[in-house]
Image 1 (tube, each protein chain N blue to C red):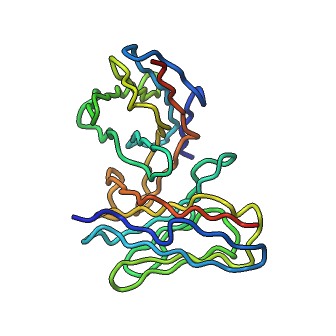
Image 2: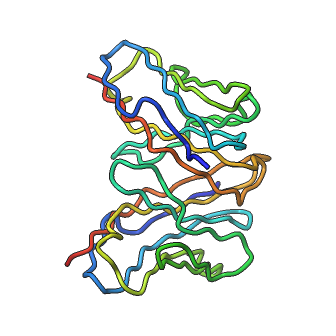
Length: 114
Length: 115
């Protein structure tokens, strides 16, 4: 069965500091991996996705993630946190079945301290 | 192109009542998925529709049902509401229903409160 684990339900960083949100996956087939962001009272918005084309994936708002098969990880990073990055972030894995089935992690709330 | 829209945005019901939520996907998208989001359980998959057919269903009781119309709009219904059904219900649409790499586009959600 496919699953994702997000380490740390809450992460706090100072404005301008590195953002690192952790995601580990479990999949019996090559996974497709996604990071979504959710701002308060809004739906989810795609930040980036890994589809096996390149291990380092660049997304919107300066975020990027690196797929590491040996570590079964897909951590999200941003070099310098901005106040507007405060939100909840979800890692997700998509697996086969003839149609799309997506499993989301439990989410990590990012707090940015001025 | 307009995004995914969900109506209503907020809803208050009492236990035992039923509720119907509506979702209009992005134009041209034929796959619609529904999720329940709660602080305790996170995001849980409810079901997915494509061409008016339910193709996949999560682990929810039969009180939760849905349907999709010929124009791809979808509704979900919850009968005999329970307090635990209080949640944010998210709808997502996608273009290619068989693509694992396909991006889902989410609506703003309907926040349901059951009293």
